[in-house]
Image 1 (spheres, helix red, strand yellow):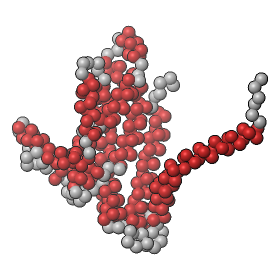
Image 2: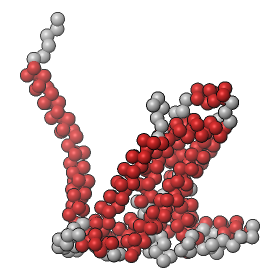
Image 3: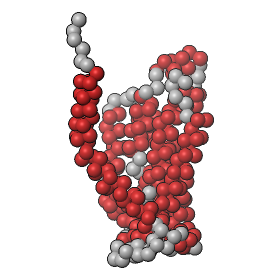
Image 4: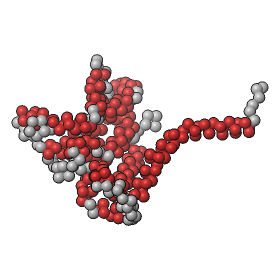
Length: 304
């Protein structure tokens, strides 16, 4: 028999291993504490103060939150953000699944088509904003030019209070290539045996989609739904670049994070902006919790 290490030796080796583990993880731990934990806890305190970048401010309790409840632009930004989320998230799921199913067809050269649909996600949002500002220009834009050729007078798009947010939804749908890739991975994970069995039973393509594809794709839909809701409520770069930070016309493009940014870095009302940040955090947490709670009823995992 080979000799075994004694209990004190094993304990000493374990302590040594833990020491080296903490030593190598210490840069990450320090970074987490310095750049995440400290700012996070600081923002909680600042949300109860009149702190600005230029002055330390005073403790004001819940005054920032009370002022937000009476701020018309605050409620306007919430409306704009919810409007975008309500339309963009479901449409991104519908179009994402539909395009993924088309791109999942086994035909020659499909890899090229998949690449083409993914390419818009690689375009920086600033470049994307400039591109669509030209396309949706009411005077000489390509979109209105095409509509005019078939006898339809195109709207002002980004210059219209009615059409500005639908325009932004349309632009955002152009860049759902990343979600399409995730849906393609989910489709590839569905066993072919299910489709073969449905062929034996005489199921048509619609019945296959309704009873096989969509139920087994629900875990991927669930993931994209959560990420889509979080991303929609954090919409910032595209509307900010399109309106040059003005949120025009008539604040119809002033989104929540844009107004938060303006308060923090334009008006130097850091306490006010911190209060807005924590309200946004609570809203996203509540919506995410509701989605997780409802997922028990509609998300189906293979083997369960």
